[in-house]
Length: 149
Image 1: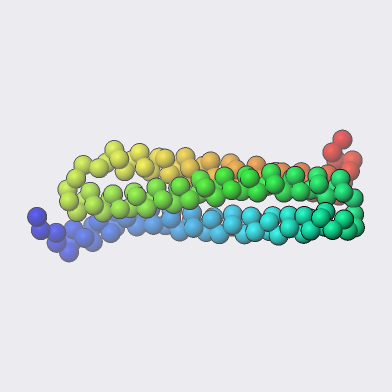
Image 2: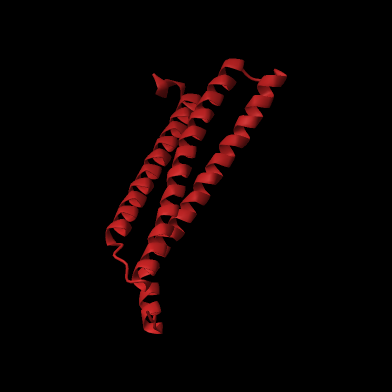
């Protein structure tokens, strides 16, 4: 079985669109990990403050810590789903290349992986949105006490 340069060029063209998706997923992962890092940094400050018994209300610090733990949990789920999406997109790219190069019928497998990747991406966005709602809700409770009533 001979693979010609035009065949390889066609295979690469098929793989380009998922590569752009992969770039977007990578950028989203960077945003998610930055959000998680900020949550972890703030949690460490509060945990140190609680263990030292320094400044502020114990109840307020505990309440904020619980909110931060919830946010971290949501972001972790978003990261997991985004990573799954990235892996599935990589599988799609590899399957496109292998299927076309070796003349294998992988269309259903490729479609399944792509759809699963899209569901993972959608789920990741849902968890990110939930985390943003929790973060903004905690802000309004802290700075606008009348808003929580």
